[in-house]
Image (cartoon, rainbow, N blue to C red):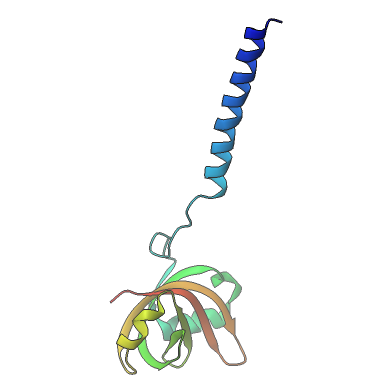
Length: 129
């Protein structure tokens, strides 16, 4: 093989590897979807949702829900709706603007149910109103 054929083959291989590397990088590091972009599986009050979870908690695991309720407690990471649904806020900077007894609509991902405390846990919570 002449030097020019070797150069062409090496150039084609390097360009192919660069395109393949770029494709793998984009696939591996693609942006995650936000809660707003994910499909909503349930919308309603937190009390009704708690009743649904008591019958089959595993069905609701990692499901995006939108709940209405009244803030009954708050801490430095989130709020509690109707004494039974703890919502870890995505943006804790909103906490000072939220008040006890305030009615809110939240959207978040259900991550678990504590049957001892009868409390639903929701993370990545955003305030809709």
